[in-house]
Length: 203
Length: 203
Image (cartoon, rainbow over all chains, first blue to last red; front, top):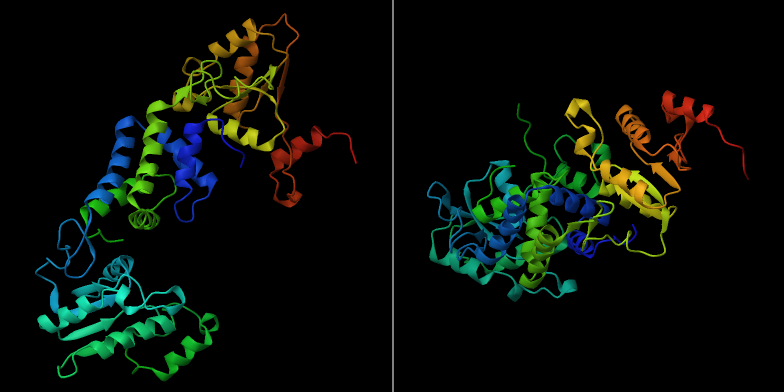
């Protein structure tokens, strides 16, 4: 696409094109859309971004994003406070919440151990996790980390740090073929794992 | 997707989801992306939108969007000022400019005559077009309007309003099969038109 005839337009398109997966053509569509909206609506749009960026906080317990110093999950009395699900980032919380299958708490590491990218255990919220496990009554810690060597390494590292004497269950997400998927389209490693870890047939 | 645990996040996602073609999932991806950026970059992002909305003007000649009262095309001395290409909206200008095949001026109607949607000639920038043709030396008026009954009607209405006595050429975009397209996938009307309006074979 050629450069646009208006600098104001060009600037806005350039900014929208910094969003993930958005090229100049889509950015232009967004900008022309906003140009057609009334000024109050556009102000609402930019205000919501500014407010998000300036007011959002990190939950002091689990490092989730929060509107105050404690996130809505940690302050929800209906949640099972004896279970902590360890995730890499905030997006993973949203994914798991969307399943509606988990009622415990979370702990956001803020990344994963990756020597290749120079991320070590001290760059992650691991100490605060160990502290939580030590200071509150935790029955189970679930590793919901990516199914890669880095994910496994991170889980193993944390596992070794957890208090040994206690009766804490440590678990990890089940690996296997995706629901609805053909065996044909499942990679060998996953298929192999799903045979080894087969579960009792249940109607 | 379930509601998000943060109101600030929820608001921003809601706003991004108002953009054309953007659902809540993609909106969330944008918002989490912005959350990871540094504050100055996010400010640049929102400022570019605010500036666009508050400072942009309409070209007093052709109704294109402009940074001042005359757009960059109308103020470009290298353009052929004897030709006006009539388009429905600003986006059409960008599309034609992207082809690099046109060096004349434009005139943005701001819509198309559509009784179904209650848009009549007086809602469009038709009078200012006639005035331009009457007051400056125009050699050709090109209708680059959509290939529908509404587009043809709008062209015909303007054609009837143009000064008769003059030597102005009035033309319209060629219709035919798209370059690279199979005949098989070209609709009958277009294919029929492309046979009737066939042009001399040219190597």
